[in-house]
Length: 166
Image (cartoon, rainbow, N blue to C red; front, top):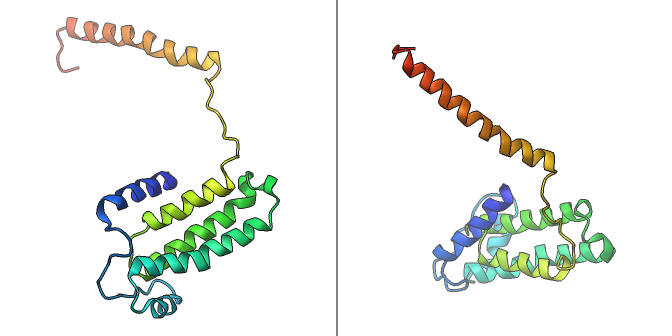
């Protein structure tokens, strides 16, 4: 659910965000973490999205890539092996965004994650959806078919009694 909301946020960020690097507003600095003053000092005079791009590439992306390089390529597709690395990447980009007062997720973050997926996870097999067992399908189909006539009969019997209050 959280991932779905994240992707919706990325989609909506395209609708509301100017092309990154075009912001001419003075740099405001958030106070989300103790790193915010360092990030903002580094970014002094740069457009927000350019600064976000540099910080994300040098801090978040490089840490993720070095951690992934320490894994065997066969381990890249095992979620338990990459979950913490992936989460740290996400938290890192979110922290930078919060400090620079940029909405997260945004188009830059999406670009980072798309690049990572195309580099590391493109060959991972995904679980294919399959039909449930026949007994489950039968139960889900037959139950409403049987309940509809019963409910109609109850309504007809109730109205035949002439007692509208019960």
